[in-house]
Length: 149
Image (tube, rainbow, N blue to C red; front, side, top):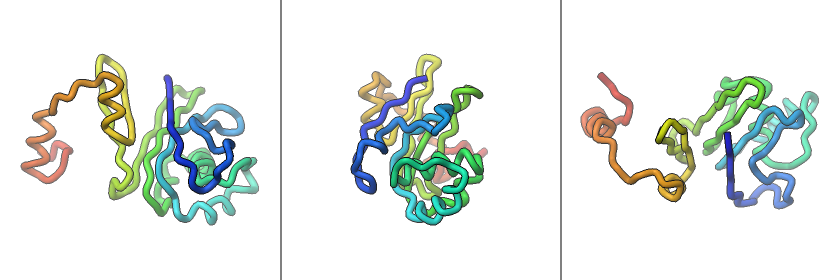
């Protein structure tokens, strides 16, 4: 597993919020794009249990996932996409906001999963620019990229 990230610092300008971001125990590794507007309130709920070292919403998202698992998404107000790798369980959890304001592009190519918040990053990784006709047909027929049969 390899994760990379190019950070645009807005909330916490220090290098402490650089990504990939690791949990205090080093088990969880996260890349994140976006903003969770209610991160201060969530941090207040979590700060007795987790050793915060930054003022970033990134750290709040990571510890919210550690505390509540995928149910953390129900608590987030904002626009975001992120992926968290669990080293011990060897599992990847990825999500985006409800409306897809922060996109999460992904593709399985040559038995590998690639993902990015910009499609240009996938092309830079060598993913061919070939449209998936089944996905386009589903989108044009049903207004969604999910196969709605």
